[in-house]
Image 1 (cartoon, rainbow, N blue to C red):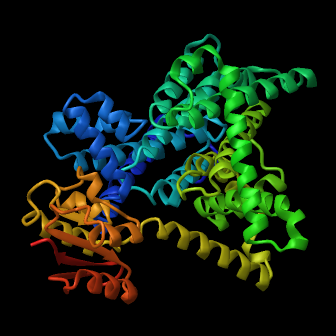
Image 2 (cartoon, rainbow, N blue to C red):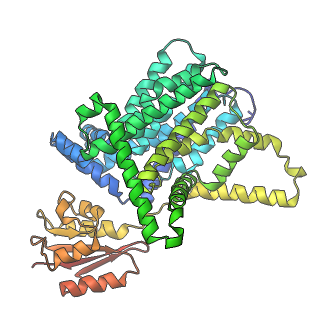
Image 3 (tube, rainbow, N blue to C red):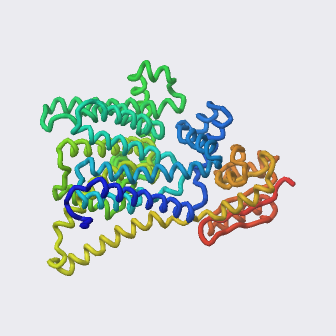
Amino acid sequence: MNLLSDRPADPLFLGVTLIFCAIAGVIASAWCIHIDDVINNDGVEYIRAAEQLAARNWAGAFAVHQWPFFSFLMWGTSEVLGTSYEVAGQLLNASFFTASSLLFVGVVRAFGGTSRRLTILAALVAVLHPAFNEYRAFIIRDAGYLAFYLLALLYLARSLQASGWRYPAAVVVALLVASLFRVEGVVFLLSAPLLILTVRGESGGSSWIRLALTVLSSAVLALVLGWWLIAPNGGVSAEVSASAPLEVISIAWDQITSSVSYKIALLRTEFLGTYAAEYAWALFVFAVLMILLSATLSQLTIPWALLAIGGVVVGVRFPLKSLNRIWLTLVGMHLVILLVFAVIKLFLVARYPLALAVTILILIPFALERVALAIRWHKLKTPARALVGVLLLWAVGESVSGLDNVTRATAIKDAGLWLADRATTPESLVTNDRRLAYYAGRHTDLKYIEPRWARLKLGLTEWRWWTKGSYFALRLSREDKAREDLFTEALGKSPVKEFAGESGDRVLVYKIYE
């Protein structure tokens, strides 16, 4: 059997490939959780929301997290399986990331990669690329969003060659579920009619129609992002958002421009001299673009990004023009969403471009096939062979890095578990790390979790905010001797216990207010 032939993959071949992906996904999840068994900060918040849902405190759950659907799933899974919320979250994420790998193979096939060669290449990308593995140990809602986004994309591509509304309806349902995980899903849900028209439209068409669709799509994005920016902060009520969407967009625009103007003024006064003040706008635009580019390349990784860019440059395309249009549209929509966030916040969390990276990766199997067919190793000169070898090793190294995220927070978990038997009453533990508070069972004492150094020191000494606190657990970097001396002197006592792993931060535990 020739695994890399250009023959169409029969159902048996496809089934074996998907089973391989599923087994690899389960093993990868188990391995990642094994080497990184310390909960992430967001995971603590999802658990807090799940606890509120279990107590039937719906308002409390929304107060903890404005998108509590993932916490709802954690609660339901915990009730059904009898596990802790942490284990439930890990099981859900393992399922969603594994499903994403399988769906990615399906999407590549729906985009024209039906041969055995392209099916195998798609499976290798889904198994090896860090986008599918890097966050397997995390408890995050992004995995659920990614799975249902890919499901919608699968049905969207299939709707191209199928009559009726079965597939378009499935697209809407999948995006509806995706929107329960992340706000980006709402953007794509409201844009679903335009996406479906883009797929089913003729390759030609009036440029005015294309312009109208672009403007309408931009309006949808502005509406959703305006609600996203204003409504959660109480700036606009839900009734106003529904009855006066233009007012929401207007207020959102005013807040965005005010925020940008403030950042520009800050750049002028703090970073640029008198004679360079006029370049503040240029510096701001450059910073935003660099944030967007850096976050995208970090998620996609440079060797895979070079392959994607090279594929586009040399003319790698999907078999049908409509699929090229939809791929470019999805990439553009992701970039616009990330750009808006970068303009407002001036940062992007590393995993925010996850769905963008996976969308770009759809092109990779086709690019790899082009490279494999074009390169004749025996005809390459030594410099070319060296370059190809370096790029391959680089790509393999980046892939391995997604499975090599060994925890650096062992001390935090150990300290929390040690305190769980000692700080047994409410408000008995003061700390600057919510993960430590979680392992100590004190993660609901929010007023006793203070990450800001200055407020932590003053609250412990001069203001005496936490008079019920029995223990103070301080997370520090390994080299931060100055803050250790500062708090030891301020409290007038030495730590009763110190936790330090082989790498990462350390934790000092003080006995206070005895």
